[in-house]
Length: 142
Image (cartoon, rainbow, N blue to C red; front, side, top):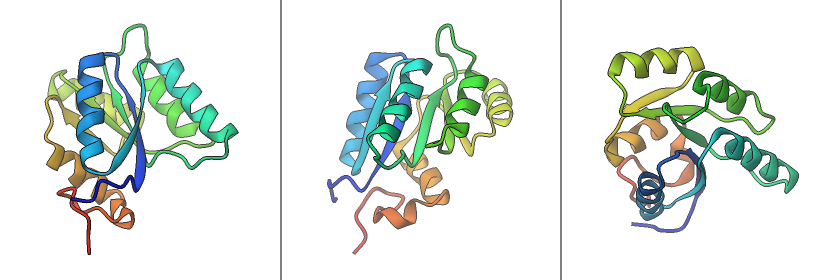
């Protein structure tokens, strides 16, 4: 497996343990992950990337149940930002709530927690990961 970071992702997750696990797992698959623990920090991350003239994240993994946050508004704001990017919604909420929020946001996909890395990589691949040099199983292509 190639551990070189070929692209980056923004994770918006308030639970530190969950975030650390996802960041570590994505790192094993060559995905550099920026972590924001709330909506304001997520927008600030995109603002900073823009100010520094760095490339945008390929995707945002957005948790549905962020405290004191209108997730639908945040998801739309993340997509509308000048460095906006597609949103993949993640949650332990019921499938109905998850699908409803994903539709309201215009998310490209949604995943119920706990989700498999293989399924996440498949979704990202379907959305254009093929240019990153990583296949859906997280292995470097030759």
